[in-house]
Amino acid sequence: MTEPTIVTCAVTGNITSRSQHPRLPVTPAEIADASIKAAHAGAAIAHIHVRDPETGSPSMEFKYYKEVVDRIRDSNTDLLINLTTGAGGRFVPGSPDPRVAGPGSTLLPPDERVSHVLALKPEICTLDLNTMFSGDSVVINTPSSITRMANLIRDAGVVPELEVFDSGDIHLARKLIAEDVLEGPGLFQIVLGIRYGFAATPETMLYAKTLLPTGCQWAAFGIGRAEFPMVAQAFVLGGHVRVGMEDNLYLARGQLTPDNAALVERAVEIVERLGGSIATPSEARAMLRVTSPIKELSDV
Image 1 (spheres, rainbow, N blue to C red):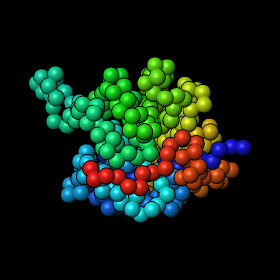
Image 2: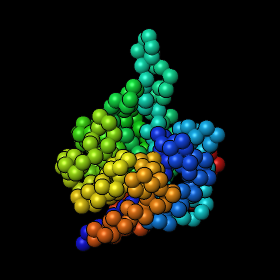
Image 3: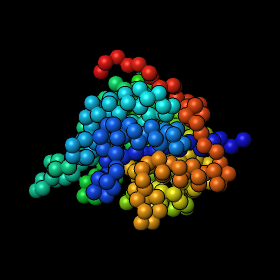
């Protein structure tokens, strides 16, 4: 019997902006509400970044993460929480000295990049394995930093979702699994459509899948107009799926999505029309081997 498909909703991210979509969730209340509505639409997992509620710009402030997580947990909505740890890995060469970090650099020690995860203990958090160009900057995730973050995440009892942007990232993941830095066979998220990474094509997704460890759980998603085609492709290849306003703001060509829930509903429709079924949060926990959410936390 084929396993049901897990739908993840990435509700806001750190790239899309209110100038692109006036209803992009920005405040902690909006991000939490979007996550809850996504759950009612069929998402088992909400992938969460936070923003500065005044400016809408990406933020790493713990108080915003805590408010989002508290609001979701207090709502008693059955939903797996997946917090990002991607922030803190960007380097912009300075001018005239490229050895000095320029404006826009966010490089942080690995302990700081996972501090909110250690305190809030979501079921899942991302662990980016990519080092790649991003515009005029470089995203840097060294093996030593990844190892430190992985050890802290494991000690916190949180499952890392390994975000892979190109083939080398998967090779690195397999090496870290062999060294017992990461627990195998792992949970992977294949990112397609980012410039200089995996292209958002069926052939590329199939290739990426062939590199994954046998028996792992995996999902994939495409950016922008590739979002829904990659939903179909991931399902056909036996993977789980992700949608959300972090990755795409349109429900159809020229038609802004009303909200994240509408993107989830479209993903659910695609999977079901192709003969699949949608995983409940309980089914997702069983497949991903994660524990139930913590209802009560001491003040942090």
